[in-house]
Image 1 (cartoon, rainbow, N blue to C red):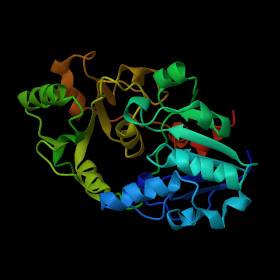
Image 2: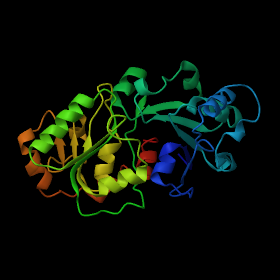
Image 3: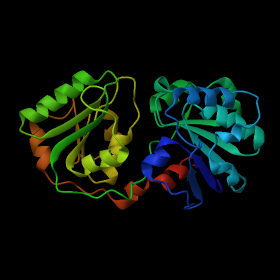
Image 4: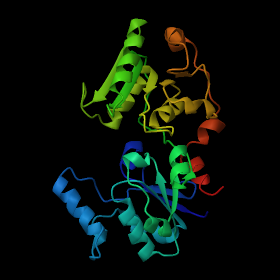
Length: 293
């Protein structure tokens, strides 16, 4: 596969990547910056989708490095297709991969045109079957700022409603019924958006991370990765996790399958360590290796 350049936006800032190449992999922001002004975002998208010159004004500094890399991987985002077209036009010999880290129903469907320029991969097995994509699960990069603390909460959730408010309320009610202390931050309902540093602070003070899968989603999302890398227990309604190599019933409670009356025992029982070999399979190096089986 040679050297790999990965272009990714909000995860780049979220994980605290430092723009330094490691193991022949360089992560850089796809775009120069994020704009809160909607008009500027619309203007950027129009320009990137046009035939007009000067598109580099919106792009990150990766053009200064791309010549040294054989493969370019882009995560799905609003401007990804436009950037792929630009890269293909400027650097036609590069291997280009788009990796869906969101379900297609929450993103943009791959077009026949874009398939001519790049390989299509996804973290969601159902989307792989439906759209003819290749499968590569989530990766995670542990944030260097993370420091574990004495638990303040037994169970912690952060996320938007996305049609799952009812099940989230059921989860929290059952946890509280058993005398467990919860912190459920449902953005737009009882909480504002939080920075990822704040999320990590809350995780550091919690015994369990709660993962609630949307009806339209099948892939393993960010929450199980956080639980794996930070050695936290997990409550999830995603039955697919039983097939993961890091699944341990001592660490992962499956909502809708496991006995809810055992939640308190699960919460305070000992965490069963997962081997470094398995955890390393989900870091950025393991993730990149899977693109070249």
